[in-house]
Length: 166
Image (tube, rainbow, N blue to C red; front, top):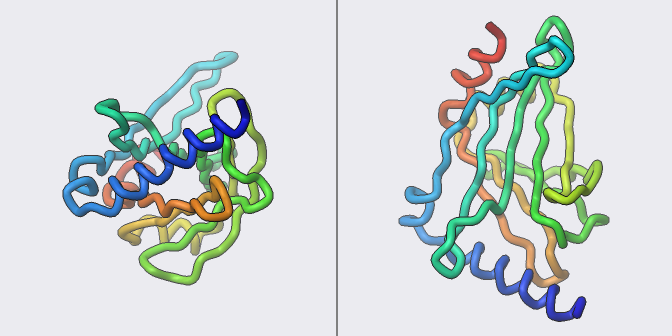
């Protein structure tokens, strides 16, 4: 049973890599940044998010969820949360690179029924790079031979983050 699940996940990831490699797919699947707010205990927490989607067997499914928010009353402590599908190799973590730059590793923080999440606190320099960047590439490992690069479009991120600071 486990081998069958691994095979299906490998096929899904291979399909994702093929879809993401085509220029038409990049335009078709390029998501926007969305602001979401939720009330809990009399406090409203807001964040911006983006879902990177792929087409698989005629259905559109998420392959990566990117969320950014501010942790702290002064809204000066930014963080990014990246959630992948279940079934990734946890020891490999995520590998991030921006606009063709040198990749860096980010370990997974936790997995739950929605996927596996890596969290990073961002300093002011990292925030400026993200706000001015074009594409953040996120790589996760499904099997030693399957490691898709998932593009996160950064256009509109600066305006979305400004809306959180209000």
